[in-house]
Amino acid sequence: MEKFQKYCLSLLILVVYTNLQSQVNCNTIVGEDCKKACEVYNFLESQGQGYKESQQGFDKAIKLCPTFSNAYKEKAVPYLKRGEFITWKILIDKAVDLDPKMHLGYRGWCKYQFLRDYKGAIADIEALEKFYPVGYLGYSANGDYELHIAKAICYSALGEKEKAISIIESQLAKKDHNVGFYDYYQLGVTYFETGKYDKALENFERQSKENDFAENIYFKSKVSKIRNKDYLDLKRLALKTYDEGKTMEDGYTHHFNKIYRKQIEEL
Image 1 (cartoon, rainbow, N blue to C red):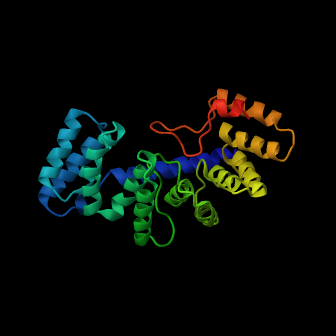
Image 2 (image 1 turned 90 degrees about the horizontal axis):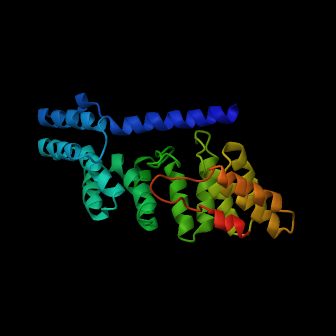
Image 3 (image 1 turned 180 degrees about the vertical axis):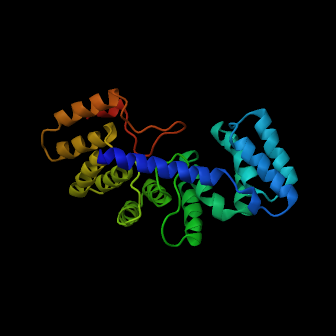
């Protein structure tokens, strides 16, 4: 029950955060044309992305108010999802130039998730930290990670494992940090890669209590195998869990440190 309540709280926070990010209070917008642009934007936000009519609507909003950053950002999204990264970058860069505080986190996450531009993602997240030197930065666009954790993943991908560990440990120690779906797993894998198997196993066990999945069980079996302990039960459980669909999933890309069935079979 406690784990379910934590999951619901995570989901609620994400929904509220996403809603706050998307809908705009048009009464705070200066200028009648910009208010109209805001109203067009809010209407289109409720209609779905990527349709010809919605893209034309964002064009209308931009024409009404060329400084309304949200219109550029939302017009950019379908290009990102379709792999048209050059057009996406032109539009999202314009949004960031107009309102860096609002859009740096989103652009940084997308640089990581879709482009594997780890250095670019770190630069954006660290630029965002200047606006929020203490505390919460916001979530990744898919809701899986608070952005400090996302930055740590990028450092890990660049081979800076100890720095990644330090960032994640620091974030998890904060009382107001809402533990993400894969936080302990990512920390455990990073410890595993540095040969600190006790710390790795400690975090895989923590992950099991929060949200268990095949990849996490796989790494627990790897630790057992390295220590010459019976690991086959864990391997079988990892395969069973994988076949039940309890894995790291993303609708558009592959998770960092994702494991596939063939890797489990070959353990």
